[in-house]
Length: 225
Image (cartoon, rainbow, N blue to C red; front, side):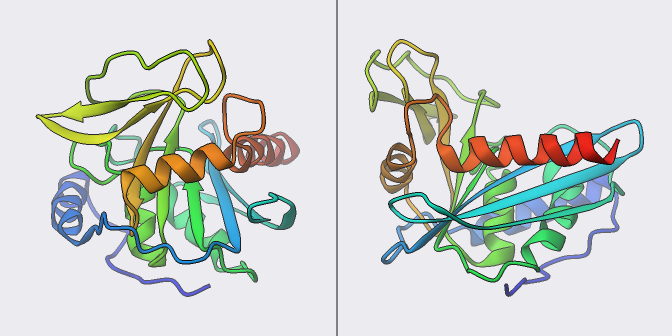
């Protein structure tokens, strides 16, 4: 899979913030998705004791969500844990895994944030720029923003807003179960992001691609130990 090396990875947290502010101007929030044939779920697991990161990617056919490929990578973590700068800690390991991909996904779901981030560029947006693919942030919890609780039925959602701007959706994926937080990453808009995430819901709170990626990286971490 083609990887765009848009900046260096050996840098200080101060320079990382500068890069985020520069890169966010390149994020495209128009829907550039064509026909979706393959969709991917991506997650990371950390072994803080040994400073190791484990990346997992699962590719599915779409819309039937049949698994066709999975790839993984592990690497030493070289960037410190700094809230808001997790992409600089995780992306090098993710890139290592994406380089192995044979079936190029048309859309990629990340267990994390898209533009619902203090500087408007979470892991889904950052990786979207690197991979030049449509990406969606699909997080279990809120990082920033204010919202009203959505309705209790599957598909109900309310806007997630920050500084008077809508940055995502608080989406109900299972009746009477707490919602998830969806935000566009790159090359996609919010309503298309919601539609795609809902199409990947199979009776659980977390959509299948990121749920299974979460299980995958947990297994990788356990196996390493």
